[in-house]
Image 1 (tube, rainbow, N blue to C red):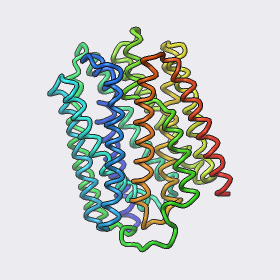
Image 2 (image 1 turned 90 degrees about the vertical axis):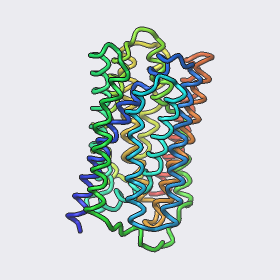
Image 3 (image 1 turned 90 degrees about the horizontal axis):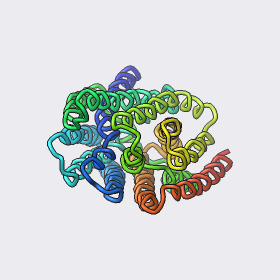
Image 4 (image 1 turned 180 degrees about the vertical axis):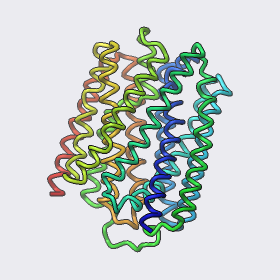
Length: 385
């Protein structure tokens, strides 16, 4: 069983690598693509709404998975979710920003429906290696794809003279391979033991979990959304070519990949207190982006942006599994994802509105959110100890 769990973990990591190569490659230029199509900053901010759809579907997926406890259902939802990646290469077929938003909504819905059940499977197959390390290694594979995707898109834009259709079309290859890999993982590890386990009384809405949700949500509320405001701002300043925006995103994904395993190991050693790293990395991002725009400051902001995402994808996700009973994990991951998705949507819309007034206004707003998040997460660490 352990051998099969390890093979399933490797296959799921490959799935995430291919999935991130697809949607992060396309997502790296969505803001600039919408700006190219003539969309306003407010309309571009609606990309945050598509992200909310994704996180709302995570709540739906968590509810379905908790009510109908079936290993076949868990794998089916995971496969269906990854099939939605095909919406990204389909962007090559349209130049209308309304259809772009529709396709991104479809892809985000698929990501949402698969996320809670996939994380439950990951929490189970990584138990023997240390959950922080397991999620860190998974995130490393994830970010290799996230690093390669924007690099591929940047190369295609550079060599094609800015042809977005060519850049999106090439992403059909990893999308198809991702679906094939998840079906292979389901064949290797068909039975998910935690699906069949009974609750032990460690419920979802504990005081510690509420503190965790509050702190994590505030961190996301002050964090800029790349697909809308970050990419839009870099395109609007006038001195950054489109391919370089994708390269900045590649830098962010590289930092995310580099930090995933070390921060995961630190979490296994130090525990819940490591979640406080999230607002610490997020706090200075908007200052480097909006106060004095330059290539150097954009690079620093991109690196910090990636560091925050590394903590989020590794430490915060692992924390959910450690705070919650195995039988309730799908529901807990759904709540966690929905709360953070709602916060990121609100962040996208608030920052887009502030941007219309003055980009500088985003900085104090973001800083206030991150300071509040840090206070709450430190309180959580103290309560857990």
